[in-house]
Image (cartoon, rainbow, N blue to C red; front, top):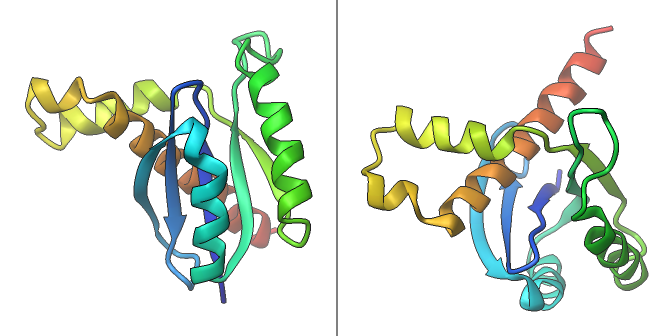
Length: 142
């Protein structure tokens, strides 16, 4: 099997998570400056087999797209153009930053580490990917 990548897209930084080849576990991979994201992804897919790319879909509480979606749409279009054989899906990312902070607290990270925005982005991408995997498993159970 091949991996699934998840992206928590931000204007400055982007968190990236990836599954193991069996697509069982989501792990944080890294955080990259957003202006280097496409180069990072193009290099990564030449080194690893990637089945799908999941992008966090920023939504507001009323289910409408949030402000950052205007930055994500051009990125997705570019991604589909440069990697046409890899499907791209959007996954609701509401509350991932809050959940990331809660995970950091539960993990016992010191305050200084919890303020590391790059780490928050990476954990958020991991949460996005984990929710995608869980949704996929739940669909298989019906």
